[in-house]
Length: 295
Image (cartoon, rainbow, N blue to C red; front, top):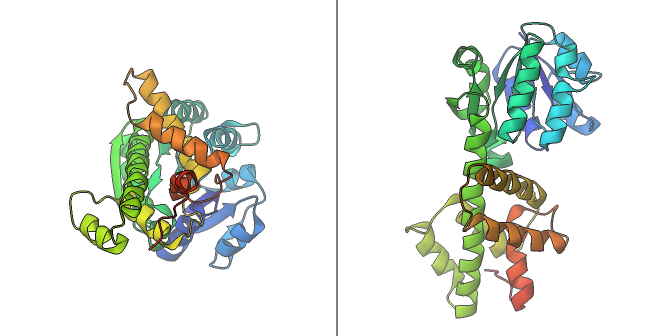
């Protein structure tokens, strides 16, 4: 089978390379970053000349892209996947998307005789690299079953959550919860720092008690070192939380916590931290109080 992969950057690249390593499929890649393409071709992938070129040559096409508008353009634009792919091709989008955008893309694909799965992922770059990423899939059940071996080649957990739009729904809810946990961890760690408790001892307690979460673990690990190099950029976290809040608004669910986390993110981005890791939101507390949470 010929597999196309469009968008082989921080997240797409590791997933694509696991497909190359773990399957016998012929893989064709495209990215605007030539270094990202090279990292895949060095393992045996071929380089496509454009989105349309990859689409025309492959049986299954995956995308991993940063923003919903980019996904829609790559999927449905005049030189996009729907325009170039042959009838019967399967399109799998691994990006974090808005449910409405996913449904528009799926409708556009269907009009061209193509099937689509939306399959956003969770776990960050480390789990993308080691092949344990979680994939939540929305789409036709039969199409899902047919593509399950491919998805498992770069994932530790693949869950079919329903029709098109439900994958994005699951991802946005998951990320909203993770960001809220992370923001709460920032506040808690600053309280601990100002109270004078040994932060390593506090960390030991939390990691083995009811306050533990992945959001806390990421925040503590980054903050204690003062190392906020992006594994998941604040700008992307802001985008995901905005999409989750828009979904909540559409469904009439009052926002009591997420809007406050959004404000914290906005302040951090206003400090020029949009390209740093999402955990850099603790820098808002640090700058306001003149105290760094280091241990």
